[in-house]
Length: 120
Image 1: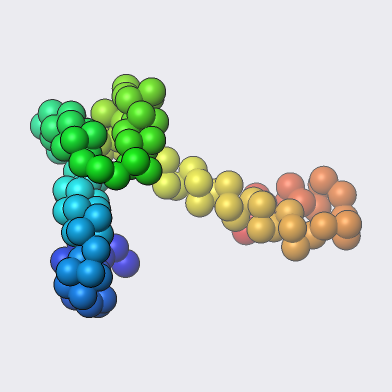
Image 2: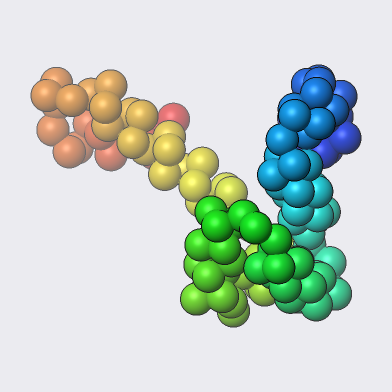
């Protein structure tokens, strides 16, 4: 279950944290802005550019490193933010295969592992 930023905010008393520390207020604002970009839409590349400029103008050095990483692989980030495709099903198959392999560790050979993966 994916929760929205506001649902998470309501679970915690973020007002108390942000009032105690101005950096937390700034961080909550920028993280909320990034969370809005995570639903794929056509214009999200411009939104990402605006978000990066906003973060770089803030005094949050750890997020500066994050934005540098986003810039290094900008084509992949733009594709993730604008295209409806996901590698979730592939990752699920990989996780299942690794789980089966761990369960069978040292018990049988490749043939039985192959059968369990194909039949499971």
